[in-house]
Structures are given as structure tokens and as C-alpha cells.
Length: 318
Ligand SMILES: Cc1ncc(C[n+]2csc(CCOP(=O)(O)OP(=O)(O)O)c2C)c(N)n1
Image: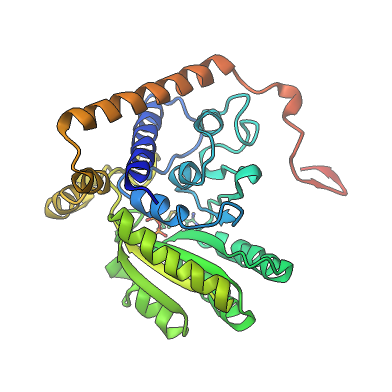
């Protein structure tokens, strides 16, 4: 992984998210958005380590994962804005991005529900015998669900090459994780006898190294592995008209993590000057402005597509 490329991808995610947040503030988005600002190094570091044909399963905080998986910005923005030409025809919205061409299987809004889906993919990949692993992302709160324990237990028992990436941002919606969870994610996973690493989730190179090692183990040993990435969400949990971070998080905590921003850390390691950073910022902002302008001009999906690619039952369309 080239650090300069990782830096550029993290910046694309950050500026994309900030623009989506602006749209949400103007009520231009139907449904909720869940920003990924501050956590960019996790998606970028991990997905730079996967093989391009290894499947990725995401959750509702999925825009950054999609960008890091190589999904084109145009399809993402049109989907989030509900426009024609969106990844899912403008019908899925922010929480349901999927792009099979990039092996990005999709996201789910139900906490923990992505894990058994990913385990099924990992089983299919193991049976295909091509040596590929599967990557699934979740938040630290998702490790408190029953389905996560069931999935990890089955993955260990059946020997599935599954890398679970737990993005530990210390919060679960508006609740501090340590109020509702009395073990760290790593301790929970250790109790199941599953290999794991904890890493500084704001250091994209450290994430990349750790993910590379765990993916290699998944492929070689056909065992699940867990990467716990300690990180922090800069913006709100979701656009639901709820509280903003400054209203419920300790100011010292916010300041601590602001000083450890993953994009700033990468810029410092690259020794970028202020001019170079401004230039990068301007280039990426221009790219994203163009994508949003094209999405706005695209208009709504054709109503005739409303009944295509949706679930049908013997009783008809539900
Ligand atoms: C099964 C289920 N329960 C509750 C919710 C509501 N909910 C959405 S996100 C969230 C918090 C999840 O926290 P975490 O897994 O740490 O991820 P984060 O949002 O912090 O990235 C909750 C409770 C849900 N979507 N699904």
C-alpha cells in the first residue's frame, strides 16, 4: 500500500462524507445517513490488504467502506441521493450500498446482521477452494449481539476464512460502550478462542499491516480472525434529528481524538506541506463537486423501475 494513495482515498471519503452531511442538513436525503468521518484509516488500511476478488460485507456506516473497496463515487452519491444511476437504482439509499463488480456485497442496517451473511460467503469461498478470505466490518456494539457470538463460534468450528473488522469507536449510538460492555472486544473474542489483534485504527499503515497478517492467516489456516481497530467518529451517530457529539460526549475526549485525526497523521508521515495539503484538498473537492452536480442533474429513477430487482413471493410483490 502506498501511503500517498491511502491518504488520497481517506481524503476522498472525508470530503464525500462532509458533502453528504451538508445534503442531510438540507433534508435532501430520504432516510438516515451514518457518517464515517474519523474512521477512514480502518476501511482504507484493511481493504488495501484484501485481494480484489475477496468479498466485503459492510453495515449501515458503509460509504467509506464502499469508497475504499473501489466503488465509483458516482454510483455511491446517486444511490445516497436516490437518483437514477445509483448503485441499486436509487432504491437502496445510504444504508444499502452494493456493487458486485467490486466484490462489495452490501450493507445492512440491522446491528450484527451482516456477520452471518459474511460467514455464509466465507463458507462458499472455502468450498470454492480458491484460497480467498472474506472481510466483514462491524461496530464494537455489534459484538454485544447474540448473532455475533453464534457467527464467530460457527466460523471457528467450521473453519471459515473470515476476517471480522471491529471498528471500536467507543460509542453505541448515544451510549458509551463501557457502560454496556464489561469486556473489551478483544477479551470477548479471546473467550471464543479466536485469533485477534488490536490496532491503532487511526494509523492507516498499522491497520494495513495487521489486516494483511490476519488475512494471510485466514487464507492459510482457514480460520476466522478478528481485527479490533480503536478509532473515533468525528460526526454524529446518524442523521435522525438527535444530539450532536458536542452535546453528549466529553469535550476532552473529542479534543483528544481530534488531535489524532487519521488524515492529519498520514499527512505528517508523508511530510506534506500546507500548500500540498491545500492542493490535494482542492483536487478532491473538485472531483466530488462534479459527482454531486452530475447526480443532481440525473433526476429521480424511472417509476417503471420501482418493481424491478425487489423481493417477490409466490403471493406476488410485497
Ligand atoms: C438489532 C438492532 N438493534 C438496534 C439498532 C439501532 N442501532 C443502530 S446503530 C446502533 C449502535 C451500534 O453501535 P456500534 O455497533 O458500536 O456501531 P457504531 O454505530 O458505533 O459504528 C443501534 C443500537 C439496530 N439498527 N439493530
